Image (cartoon, rainbow, N blue to C red):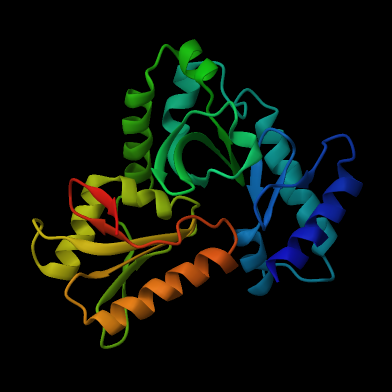
Length: 260
């Protein structure tokens, strides 16, 4: 569904904005104009919910992206020139190391073929922060990362930590804001997850970030068969969903993240 939806959106954008250079992004379900990546997941969900339909599809897509492009072309650029304009929009992000548009982006290894990165949040997408941007802002990468984490927390101070129904105790984060997987980088969020699963902040848990828009965790004392089933489901999700990340399960504490 997401691939066909993305193709349909791209057809509209290339017709309505021929000079913008829209094309498929490196990940399934994304488009890019060469500078900003635009995820189609939320837009596709709106279509499925009937917020717009086949009769007004072209108009809805045109109007949505006209607003986005106007914002990007205004004084609030995709990558702001000034630090005062950039700092509140800075976010940390988890991305596949296989993406081709990361060559100049500030990245750090996370796990296997996954990097953590710095992005500027935009309406409908985000743009990767480069070392040249940090130099212009007179900011260090470490300081920017900490601010990017804090901005995610500020953006949703009441974290919707969902308790999954069933006999196995599972918690998940799926806000749809594009930074759900990246929340595993934030110690206070890991602490919330561990407290929910174990009743203590000093424990540990298994967690997984199979795609950009999903974080799931479960206790470490599950019977091996159930743990294996969950691990296989995580790997399958990472292969099949848009914005794929890590196929492997992680072991987390409030202070650490390790591959199992």
